Amino acid sequence: MKKLFVIKEHPFVFIVALIILLTIFLLIIFRPSHPHRSDFVNEENVEQSLPDYKVREIDSGEWNKGVCVESINGDAVVGNTLLIPASDTVVMYGWAVDIDRKCPASEIYMEVNGKFVKGVYGLPRMDIQKQVAVKCSPNVGFYFYFDRRLLGNEPELATDVKFHLIDKEQMMVISAVDFSLMYQSSISEKPTRIVETGGWFSGMVLDYCGGGTIQYGATRQVESMTKENLIRMIGWAVDLDHRLPLKSLYLSVNDVVYKIGYGTTSRIDVKEAIGIEGSDRLGFDITLPRIFFQNADGTLCDHIDFYLEDKNGYISGPIRYDWVNN
Image 1 (cartoon, helix red, strand yellow):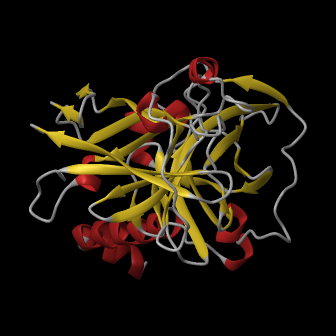
Image 2 (cartoon, rainbow, N blue to C red):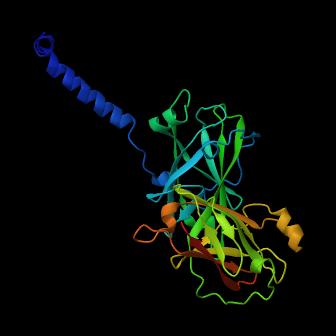
């Protein structure tokens, strides 16, 4: 009776208390999940294959085909190129949906070096449910917590990863969403050589850069790029002297060198035109935030340099592109 009296005489206090209790309950239920040691994936517990389901190809091209990586070890990620930190462990956060059906998946895997890292899937993401019009449930967030060595060791580091979703019915593997990898690196200790063949721009061409006009002549220039937050760069590179694919490709921005994803796209046209022996995986396609190319004062850098590493580990370059009127 005393409890009913309190409710009756002080309804406002009761309502406030009820709201507080409900808020605490919701915070407990929907609190952000942090990686647990039990979720850590290394060579001992990495999957050797995907579940034996049929593969369903993705029809929709929007929203990166349904997978978005938003942060790696706490740093923001924009675009389809992931900058991998030098730390021993990697924590990768994002969201993923069955984009064709606009519904959550049931599981997510990251394929790297022929092995499969299983992610923790099902974190609540109310924001994504609204943005992508996800049906049924907002639980489309994920994280991966894994040993960096799964990406390989120097100099044989992975240049790309693929994400595979298992659909809600656990009947199909939704395959596959590609991301390129980029590592901060150094080329100072590697032996150098000069490209002897003078044709085909010394073996490296930037076909596209942020929608700008690319000029070839005494100097290579990229003019009038778009002002969007993302800059996409597409091109190809080969060891022109030996008519072979490269071992690695490096990008230097403001004197900081990064190893970028090379051989991530097929360039049969280049293979046939130059007479390259072996693989036609001679291209690269990277998308990076505009801020990546900015100086401390907010202006864009004056130029970028590319360095080519052949199969024997020799570095040739730099091949420079001046950025003008940007």
